[in-house]
Length: 516
Image 1 (cartoon, rainbow, N blue to C red):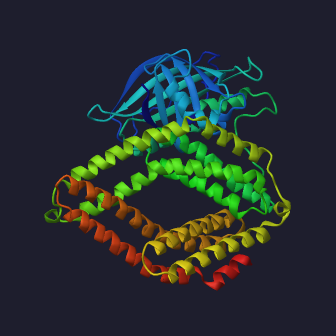
Image 2 (cartoon, rainbow, N blue to C red):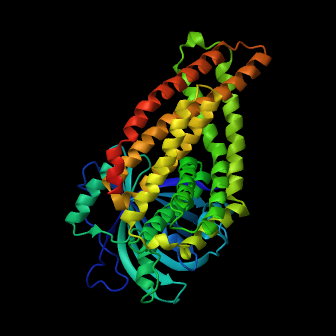
Image 3 (cartoon, one colour):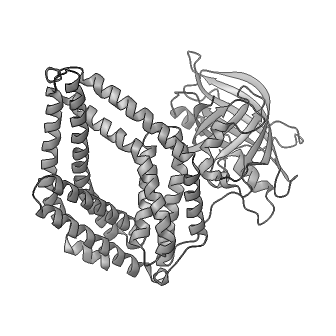
């Protein structure tokens, strides 16, 4: 069973003591005077032997992921590290085995896409560990002095590199301020932050044959309209890939972010059809729609449950009659369990993997049309304003209808158009700057109003279904009716608000600035 640990650390270059010979241990400045540190506890020296695995084209390294099999030390086993932010990574540990554990392989599926993992680098480190303790003897941070020898295992096997470095890792639940205090002391001692973010990245760089890839992803600077659209599509593809393991780990908002990336890519295909050939993008767009729908089973239930629970929590206790909370909890648990399993099954399926490969193929050999060579400040505004026109027509149609089911459907269609217009403006921000940002913000405001209205429609359907079950069980439906009424009132408020928000969003001067 894999365990997850949040790793917060900083690395520093540490030269070996001059004249000490090849086996001399590096030296560390005195840390006894670091504020908050009452004592140091020497943990001794441990010998670590780690073999890092990646694809032949170093796909994991390009995304700043590391997968290793390490022996020696207290945490021998398989370690998979995901970057969180600078100096912060999530380390997922699995027991020692001859092959990559299935639970770690699953987290890499969106990146591997069937490619084999091979040993790429072996790192043997002699690690001297010191614990920094406070006045109560509690651990503040762990300081490791590592003498490292790296050996290349692929490309040109046998190439080696050696260096010394210091790692300062924050104790679980510790105050990050101690890292600042230690760094100040280390800098006074002549140490500087390491240039490489990890041992692996340094090893790959220093042992690579001249001209060989070191795992760094590089893309050309966008120039044409086609370049900019492809850059946007690539960003969404990267987001889908990155969110896959987050969804599997059930991290907050991961399903939502993955679903948004699928919608953004699909929207780009539809908006910029004069730039990318529809005969290629339409089949991919269909698969993206399928994936978004599958992810929606999980996400939609999550949003709906949060909305109903918030409504219920806001009611005075005297208005909550019957086992309402218990019924909501049972409904929520049943929906979450079913949708969670279905989502992971989708990510494990061949259809999903085929979608990722088709996006890879599109980016490798883009189906560009003549419009791709047009300057971006000419091509992108035309596409955006066309999406705006579609939205305007749908809103005018919806507002002309009487309140009720037909209008609800029309407003939902307008919501889809608002989302597409927003994404179109978002893709153009690197080119059009402030006018595109203003347009995007206004489309988002329209989308928010329409989205809340649609959420109310869905919530009322769920509340009615729960009320029917409660009534059939002989329970009072009073609270369910009250919640239903609140949602109905919320939808009416949003319908009254829409003309005001739309009037601001449809400002002619803003559209003129967008078109230049």
